[in-house]
Image 1 (cartoon, rainbow over the protein chains, first blue to last red):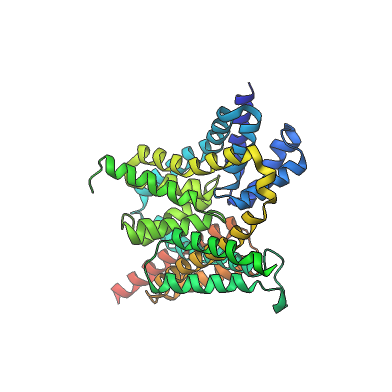
Image 2: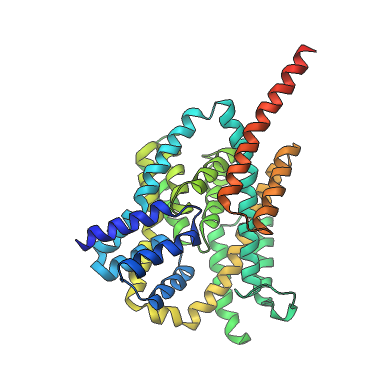
Length: 188
Length: 192
């Protein structure tokens, strides 16, 4: 029974979170804290923190975390499946429509408008990440002393390497993590 | 392209690998997918990848999950989509299941904090690298309409926090109008 409830809860979270990422937060909170009481508000805040510290979309992270606490490994799998079911169905329908009609003029027009918009949205996300890294996650201010200089240095070196040579992005991220682990302890 | 076991393994492994290392939200994984599938494997064209991103963005659910489904479908139909979506959700499923056992220790660990702070700067560099390439691709065609649209959409998102859904709807609508406007003026030109 708990598996069914988990599936249905996360199905709704998957279905109603449009726009990705933090848009899903209030929905997750509503289902797991308010409606079912699976987590306290503090535990929910912990899940959000963990999500920022681990890879993967926040809704999937929440599904795995809550699923495993409520019903072990099957719970984690069922909650995750519930979360991705709407995505699978809707994305497949849209993919079918896209590949069937992308020759149409109106469709091409719409896509011509969407492509630059997508580039703008990714640029926006990228700049937000840079600000977040430089100002240690605090609000961005004009105060230069609040800037995390090591973060600026890692960013600059990493970007230089990426532009100059063909290196794996994963290697860059791991390298940046190792630098952080080795140097930050001496700075604080 | 030969669709043998090796191809399916490569498809699964690349989504699994990208998902396992993607910190910082949906757009980061899209940037990585673009680099892998467009630049490295050359399985998908640049424009098509942007189209798939726009669809992933407008569909309910996590962007990373939607994008992986679309890429999988593009490469190998419904079986491909199922393969890539499982490749994408398995890493967080495994990692969170392991962490949930001792999550307070992980959350409060200073070492983890330092590593993540370093990684944050690395992730920022990776996404900016991709952003530079994408902006170049838009500007190199030297058409004023997409460049203008890109600038306006950026200003709306960055400075005015306009919702993503509104930006997508307005830009799609403007794109549809512009193609009819263009063909209308082109026909007039033919008659003259």
